[in-house]
Image 1 (cartoon, rainbow, N blue to C red):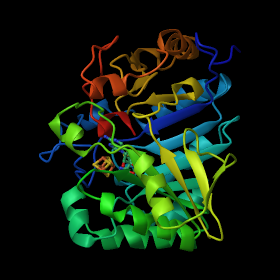
Image 2: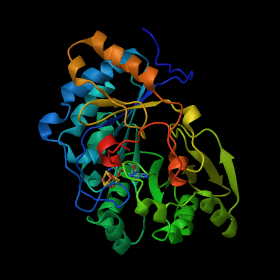
Image 3: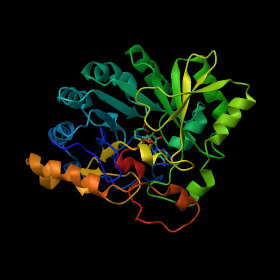
Length: 333
Ligand code: SAM
Ligand code: SF4
């Protein structure tokens, strides 16, 4: 079997699978307040079909999966999918990204089914601000979800915190203190213009250099670490004398495309070689035909661009390709 190597010699062993475009929150950086037009349920890949796509991917060298969405925990029976994915030869890791709202009830079943790691999104520690950012839901349920994940044995738990200028930048210090005092890994993420390079994005985009400045202001001694398993494009830091760690994911201010090893599968069945651009390959015509499915994966390698151009977008420069109009929830972040 050929390996998944693209035109720029990047080897791909990681597939992020969106199992639904639906969500129980409406985060202001991800979806418009009124929501988006959700795909009709019939358009979503069934669990059988997702397993089929992953079987071909695994035969081509995919060994790591991440289940995401939309909110993956709103799709019924997710543990049954995980169990089937974990049994596919070659699959070594299955991680999950969730907003945590429904996690308290599902953490244990998901761990038993084969989820190896969990990332929980947490942008604020303030209940009122949570409502402002997520526009619905309750912070308390997310915190319960984090606790349940720890009880179920997930370690270290990673928290995804999208930093927004003028919204939660005043909580950088609190999140850094959490990373110092608790056995957690806090990942600060730059706000990306996915599917909408609008005024909101320009207003709230915050480069992550602010996090390192704040660590210095707080007198924290930080040290780069290279070996956090499964952290992909994150620049990771340890805090001297601390229980946890933190990481910076800065796709806009300093992109990491040269290290990209990932493909995405959207809930409605398209392989996306790059998060940012419009190009995607519909897997549905290839279902039931492993050779055609393999050819699609190889085609993704042929069309994958060298990098995204989010920084160019920020500077209002012309771009070389056409950006996607899908929102993050529709692609699978
Ligand atoms: N619903 C789940 C959640 O929120 O964790 C999984 C899907 S969500 C699209 C995956 C991750 O993408 C979350 O951590 C979220 O904060 C992040 N995200 C969504 N839109 C983003 C944007 N425009 N820029 C940066 N990160 C974004
Ligand atoms: Fe939903 Fe996750 Fe998007 Fe928030 S970031 S709206 S929780 S998909």
